[in-house]
Image 1 (tube, rainbow, N blue to C red):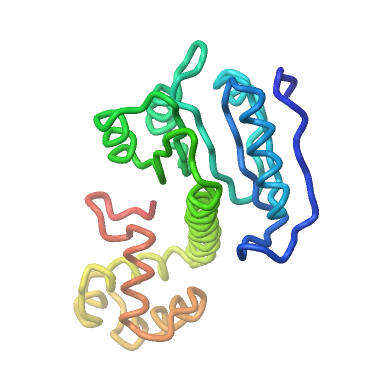
Image 2: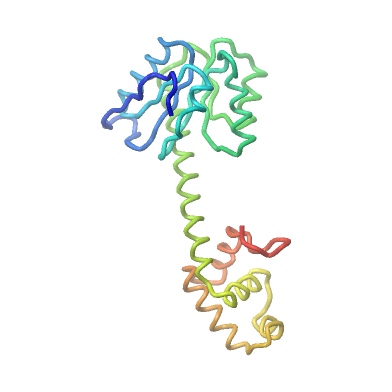
Length: 229
């Protein structure tokens, strides 16, 4: 979407600091144009794509990047502050690693930001390497989160591929029910339970019952309503 932000900075990755990922993006929100330009130059030097914004409202008008992302956010901004934005993102369950920067920070402010999940709280002027280290950590965490979400989506899709009877048996196994108990409840033979369980485990790529248990936990099959998440 259109906004008053500066044009995105896009560069080719280089062999420095171990952050070679052209799909990673760093968002910078600061009302100081000189600082935005300085941070953009630093991130260009390590091959990171950068999007620059003057305010939190400009950021919220933009489309989120597709790849791993972290946010460099000034605490004091016109309109909605950086801390306000952090609270708003948390309330909306939008997980975005945040690195706070400020020229007017205090201990209570920094502790509050860190308790609410910030990666780092840097006071201006800060060392370039401290900022790069925080960015590296933020991008790594967001990359791991995205990979986890992709894996979970694939697992849910495999679970949906099970037949109704296979799903029921897997849920009962996850609850700790024995084969003979499941057979009695469902009115089938214990050998039939084993066949259905084996088919379901193969579709779920579960090579053992402990692994099936971990899959069931990820899918939240054992819950009050016994339904997958």
